[in-house]
Image 1: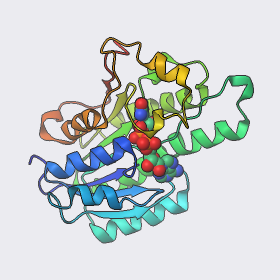
Image 2: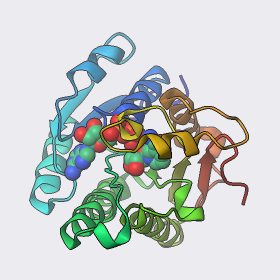
Image 3: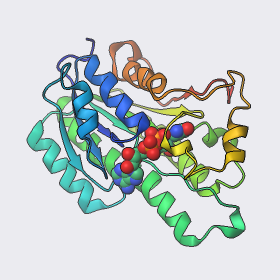
Length: 245
Ligand SMILES: NC(=O)c1ccc[n+]([C@@H]2O[C@H](COP(=O)([O-])OP(=O)(O)OC[C@H]3O[C@@H](n4cnc5c(N)ncnc54)[C@H](O)[C@@H]3O)[C@@H](O)[C@H]2O)c1
């Protein structure tokens, strides 16, 4: 229960990795507020026994007014914020020459602008406490690039840029890191968002399997806890060996 007494905001908490992160933080004793475009009832139900004081709010992370509204509701729930785990994100697969400008704009708006908006407001909420942990979500693709996913890859490169800059700007009080998952078995890798060919190629990594959302969440909980007090400005690969920097 290393996070007992801590207050955490998890975005993308109705999805695979965000939901697992919310549950992992709650299991370590944190009170968790879940945000997503979708209702997070299932997520809250999953940790109701370990942390009954969870909360939730609908939010479009790409929309400044929506994020401001979320932060207002978060403040009502708890004026103190210790941890942000920002998982909300989307992916888009298409060859460059078939990628519409609107597709690029949407991916960048959710993944990069959303990280900027939520991260900025979470840091604003943490500063009065004198410290906190910000855990963003990039991707192993931020290191490698990937044909037919260029807006997504660009957005995740951008997330690493925000992470490194905030880590410097808010040291030593707020530690800022990013999860860099490899292929994780969630809806994001499902048939609706990724071709069968790419799902197959995603398995061509040393550990030869998709990761589980809970395996990413364990790392998020570690980054939020006392064991990570000397870690900032890092992209942490949870990737089955897909990237070896
Ligand atoms: N699954 C993977 O293989 C993988 C690999 C690397 C990085 N990631 C990253 O991990 C994060 C979580 O992905 P996941 O695999 O859990 O996907 P997921 O699709 O299961 O969950 C994503 C969640 O984000 C929410 N969301 C989408 N747009 C939103 C918006 N505008 N505002 C608020 N919420 C929004 C969705 O409703 C969903 O609940 C994403 O940032 C993704 O890019 C995933």
